[in-house]
Length: 487
Figure: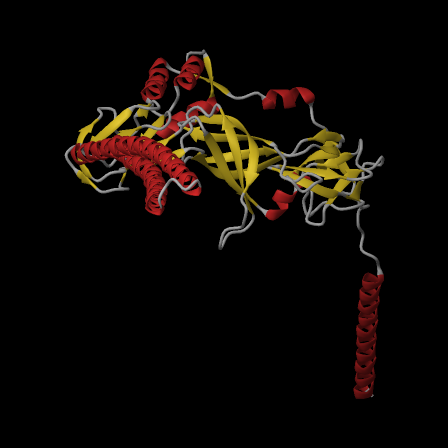
């Protein structure tokens, strides 16, 4: 009985244990299912607001500035060449590289001995030809007088012949007398013909000697020109370059001795793309006489000159693209042929365009505008020009709108933003150049460098030195000058 009781007790405890395990598993399962079925707790979401810089779109009429790069050239460049061969016997003291000469100034002389001898021979030949011409004129006068005398004698012989015929008709004269008179009259007429032939020959000799005189005079002038060519002169006011002549040296005909450049007749040649060239044409397809400004950064100071477009190249060079344009410069002080300069061309004005930062425009030519709810809106615009870090655009819905100045991938249509509007006072302060105070040693170093410069014109030096004497000097100018001197 005890065994049975113990067995039943064990079975009861086992059943209770299994029941507890089942109950515990059920509770765990229910708890897991409840946890999985519950929604996670999240705090209420807030819309993210981006801070952006904005500018106000104001339509205006703007003349775009087209920027290109070109080379300074001289409109008048003369190659000074030897017109005669020989030895250089004299060279002027100022016949050297970079010397400024006046028109008509003697630069060099070539040995004129042979040319002078040739001129003397030509003068003597001319005198001989003139003497022969005078003899021919006198011969014509004599031939004309001989012809007159022959005609008078022929008239007398004819009268004698008529008288003999009259006497023979009255039975007084003889046949032999008539025949003798007739022969005399015929001889007189033959003398007239010979005299006329002599006069014609004399007149022909006059024409021949006149031609000989002309040829002799031409030869004399050529000899005189050859003699004058032994003296080399400056054809116009200019500056000498590439001087290669030496005193005592032998030169050949047409050998280049130097170049004469007119520094006051400068122009700039620059190349633009075909699209840019099209914007410089008027309604008739002709090139506009647009104003240009060239600048060259020399030792921290920009040399500038104004000019006007005059012409363009007749054809596109082999292997080249675009168009080559020439502009005549006025008052180009300090600029020299061969300088590589920056050219700014003022295009015809564009009406109703808006000036925006280049960062406000994307690749699809759209900008982001702010709505009344301070949300972004995409507006399509037409890109008219790019001007450095700015763009000129045109659009129907731009006037008066606030445009995002700097776009980023985080910005798009519908996003709420916090606009930062520009402060006019801060903008005015930012546009003023930075000024620095110079120590006496630093100021004297900069002034000494500018005073010793050979490329700066005197008026430019005066202006720079006056700026350096001020209490506060533009920092950009100081940096450029010190970059040249390694300061």
